[in-house]
Length: 220
Ligand code: DX5
Ligand code: ZN
Image (tube, rainbow, N blue to C red; front, side, top):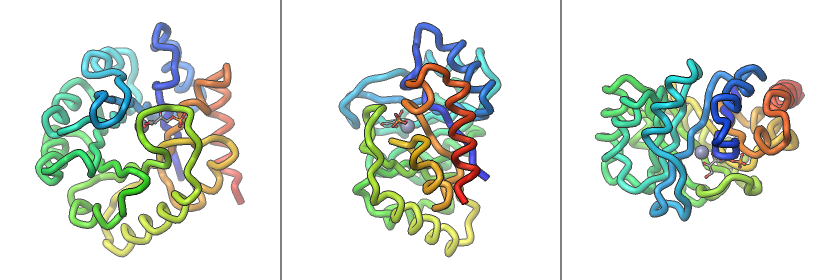
């Protein structure tokens, strides 16, 4: 079983409520919100006020991906703004245990995001405090980049590491996923699949979500 998490990064922000309603109509239950600070990543996107507005507009699960330096300073504010899931980058946080337990304590699911070139061993000590891992399959910062093929093997090794730990940690994957590779990503164990340009870049977001669900389901 897997879920599609459409990334609003590629949506039309002037019509955000409609763009959200249309992916929900296509079968998505989660919404992925990319928060960038122009420091941890070379791009600036959206922040707390937008998350607050989205919370009022939908009952979907709001999944905030914080691509910001020192995420511990803001993580709980995102929960207060309405996020159901908050992920912080292992590369950006010197006090990961503190941040993850603060997110959980505030009532949201806590995730650790990891860049393509960061070894999964960096996650070992954080697994007991994480609800999910967000495996980046592109370098974070922009939508519309190509999937890095070696991330399939990394995903498999991450799944093995989690299985060996016996902990109930779920895996989300983010970047460059479309109908051509979602099958392999599902087969390799991803449980939540972020898709930005493959959902919002094709004209009909609702049909695009349906297409991804179909391709992910019929991979055998
Ligand atoms: C990239 C973001 C992604 C992005 C995915 O830094 O974290 O969530 O929106 O977009 P696509 O699916 O177009 O690669
Ligand atoms: Zn993301």
